[in-house]
Length: 248
Image 1: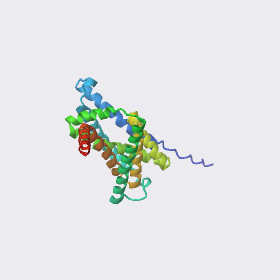
Image 2 (image 1 turned 90 degrees about the vertical axis):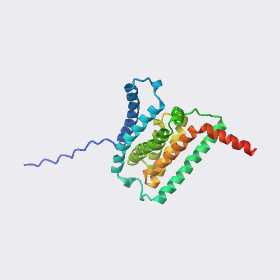
Image 3 (image 1 turned 120 degrees about the horizontal axis):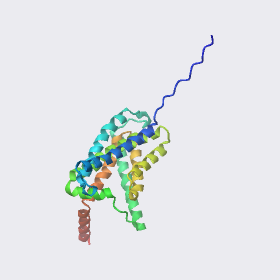
């Protein structure tokens, strides 16, 4: 009796890690929008009646939810593809310092170029809301944008998306494409180029340090100083003008 050849093993159908990454990011922004819609429905408010305090409270709570979701995912991922060296305090501080220098070096040059070209970009709608929020609730204006948002965005874009791209793509392409997606999802054309550049710097710092908290620290530093500048912009301008008068 002839023996039948063994049937080939069935291939398990797994969803690509990159598609899963997009799913997490889309889910994050969907639940952020849904939290705002829920607040509007619950309090029977119109969009124009939604205060910045309530809006940013919803954003902060959504960020906390997704931090709790994303952290276990990152902890389970294999770190061998990230860096050949184990994270150290000295290397992390070095990467952070270089990252800060790169961030503000680029932003300074970018600002000078815009000034020479006579381009005055409009302030982001989020920036305007933050400026108003900071005058009434400084704590929320800092905790949300400068702490919670950097943590969840670095978890999603660098900790999950960038690392999953690295499984299929070259290192430079993975850094660049994750940075482009980071810029696109913010939906602010005026700051698209700066966001891509910041995304590249954050991914580079993560790659070289092997520590997600380095890119989080860079992201938080940028957001914190931006929030402080927005809130105290008028006071800073007045102080600069008074110093200029004293020196003349």
